[in-house]
Length: 109
Image (tube, rainbow, N blue to C red):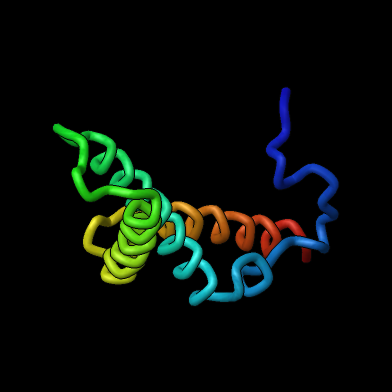
């Protein structure tokens, strides 16, 4: 049987707390938003690749500025949390952190 990566080498007394794992509530939220921003950047990059014709005035500088604008837009969209990706990621990891805390509290008495 295989063991999860998170439990390899861990001692029963050295279980990560939510504050240590992600800086508390804000750390997990920021990480989830950053993950959503990465997904949105990839989505926007894929949309930019689907162009119908070559840009007459296009250059590498224009492409660089478009990429920077897309990254900023993706960060702004992720901070608004309208897509729900960050919420799902945060909920999933919060459940895993809750399970770790329950196991640590129930196993050590």
